View 1 (cartoon, rainbow, N blue to C red):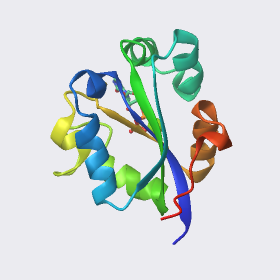
View 2 (cartoon, rainbow, N blue to C red; view 1 turned 135 degrees about the vertical axis):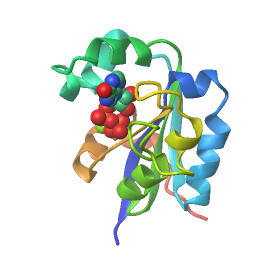
View 3 (cartoon, rainbow, N blue to C red; view 1 turned 45 degrees about the vertical axis):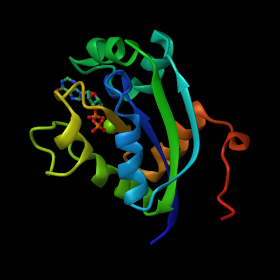
Length: 143
Ligand code: IDP
Ligand code: MG
């Protein structure tokens, strides 16, 4: 077990549907601590850059347009095995395949509009955290 940080985003559909509190509640119940958060409306250039790994995929244009369709809230979660634990709490990309009780199974409406983003490795988490936050934006929990 290792203390890790990971990047979470409540995507535009989750924010629009007032699901921020529901999603945060699931993180906190799983023992993940929010150590930084900010709301922003991504520009096309930001969404393209964030999802550059998917630039050759057929759904890329729609993904960028969806991610820019409204504000998102990005947060850094900290905890033991935070990267894997967060992915577990989110569930599979496709809500139809996500395990019952996960964010995507319970709240998502489609494989695209799936409410939440989560880093998929410790390396990507570091890159994605730096995309949204300076180290000084993050608060270590002192109690
Ligand atoms: P992840 O969010 O579970 O890590 P990725 O494969 O990294 O899934 O895909 C990034 C995002 O792109 C997904 O969360 C979803 O919003 C969208 N997406 C993935 N696959 C498809 C698809 O087949 N059709 C439409 N959108 C998709
Ligand atoms: Mg991914």
